[in-house]
Amino acid sequence: MRSKGVLVFVLLSALTAYYVYLPIPNNIEERWKLMLADSFFRSLSHLAELSEWMGLLHYMKVMMFITIAERVQPVSDERVQVSDESFDGVEVIVYQPTQRQETEEPRRAIIYLHGGGWCLGSSRMGPYDLLAKHMVTELNAVIVSVEYRLAPAYHFPAQFEDVYRVLKYFLRVDVLRGYHINSERIAVSGDSAGGNLAAAVAQQKDPEQHIQLKAQALLYPVLQALDLNTPSYQQNQHMPILPRTLMVRFWSEYFTSDKSFLRAMMANRHNNHESAALLKFVNWSLYLPDSYRQAYNYSAPPVVTGKSSVHSVGLHHLLADPRASPLLVPDTALRLLPKAYVLTCEYDVLRDDGLMYVTRLRNAGVDVTHEHYPGGFHGALMFTTWPTDFDIGHRMMDNFVSWLKKNL
Image (cartoon, rainbow, N blue to C red; front, side):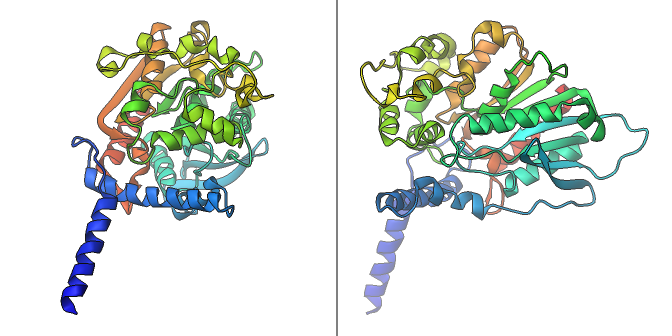
């Protein structure tokens, strides 16, 4: 009887080890801890797929468990004052220093946009609360963390519109004066999908808006939907946290809940004649440094003709909209942008989006600081609180804040 129990234990241990283990590169930082964390994400994803297949809950509804599990109630402490506000009808969380002297110089300000593929995430998650408070204390800054609407309940451009409304409201002279902010020291920043939104709003030029952003900080941003088969999408298609299938699903849900469009994007056969004219801006054979091209050969994504979901009303234009894909703007628009900080990770499907933007910004004459993590993986900045506390997450946060301290 005892031997049977031992056998069952060994089998269960073997199955667990088999499920947890992933054949990921040895130079990924804290790889075994990452495998363990990713096994939870994969389990949740499988459950979400099953739930949707059975008609119980939408895939993203189940995946929201990650957001809920890490949700906290941001509260003030001895150094940081936290308040829930509404900027032009959009919910935001404002973090600012508790103490203010009458003779104190006006402060810096950062509008921060959380990640989550436009479908998940919240400013109220523990790692974002930690990051915001860290920026307040290290920079003596005001942080505005935006709770924009999420897909699939709200598709593009709802997320962009929420963020842009917050930006325009915040840049009003009376609002900046109320928060004691230096109008020449304001930045927009975000990670992943938040980096997408940060890049997109930074590109907007309103002739009635006289106060301009000084900087944009984009942390492993997603920047284009036209080519979902770049070298980094191929190299990292099965990497932890953000495999290619999940990133493509995020893109599809951002635009529509039409499953035929999701299938087209999975096959990288979703471009129409309008988006095809812009493929030159995401041609990685032109914009990727040689060391990142490796043995991959460039092949332009096919352009779909005839009647399909790609040509449906709305989607026909969304793929070509630079508010969704900031890499699609021409060089003349890039020249007007503020200095930039771009963070990329080697083991991230979005690596090449960031690299191409760095190249194009520099070619346009923009001051760019590019920080690449050779052992980094997507979402690492979120791994700063227990039980997913990684050294690389803290190092990313410190380096990012250090750049802001010197450049904002």
